[in-house]
Amino acid sequence: MLRPTNHGGVFVPDHQTIKTAPLNLNLFCSSNVKPVTMKVTFLGTNGWYDTRTGNTCSILIQSKEYDIILDAGNGLAKADQYITQDKPAYLFISHFHIDHIEGLHTLVKFRFSKGLVICGQVGTTGILNTFVANPFTVPFAQLPFPVRFLELDEGEHAIPFPVESLLLVHPAPCFGYRLSLDGKVITYCTDTGYCDNAVLLGRNSDLLITECGLKSGQESPGWPHLNPENALQIAKEAHAKRLALTHFGAEVYKSPEDRTDVQRQFQKECPGLIVATDDLTVEI
Image 1 (cartoon, rainbow, N blue to C red):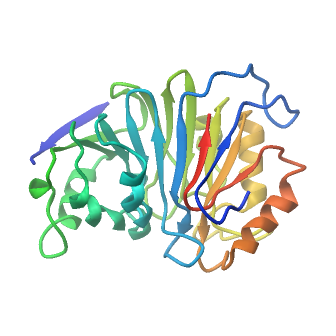
Image 2 (cartoon, helix red, strand yellow):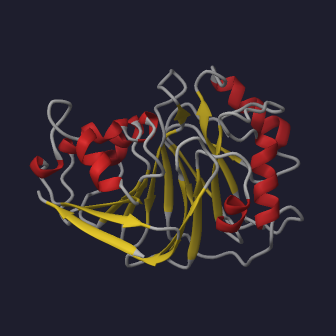
């Protein structure tokens, strides 16, 4: 159910684009190659805090009719480098840990000509109106474009494109999202440990994006996050066509080489694996 409320108002050193197509692999389900219709740009790929390896997490999806942003870490500030801001814009918030919302204070520099819809779990409106407010930053009501909130329960929604939201496993309530756009499915699961809902959301996805807060073999049962093995397990069980890793723990992945080690270690087991870096664009 939607609860609408209104409120006025692969490591690469620089930006590169990777063109991808669904792969016919034993690990993932097979599919026919489809025309490229969407771009997915990893604006920020760090978890917790910014380092020289990247900004905190935010992802831009450019579909035919919409510009969609997943989470609002500090990477959000770079979104206007990639879009014209003339499409309807949607921002999906997974949860309210600071590294997923701190970029909201940069919204004042944007000019979304058709406004911005912020989607999240029940309670999003009140929490974000407390955070994006005086004396911390420019309030939503004073932004140079209208902002509207859509609060989502668990389940399937049409907003107007199909979206499925389910709770993941994390100390704070955290939504994963499954978006259907232009005949493709993109699933986004962060922050979480391994869970059935991540597999359910990722089923037969053209692109499954998961966090990778931990290194290979590491576990964090008290504060669940994924290591590469967990992420590959979710992708395999979901029959996802492509897996992308992001939200690398800043205190764990301290250098670009730490990420390339993941690519090197798991690319044979998971052909087509995307180990995201800031400003990497993938076409699907």
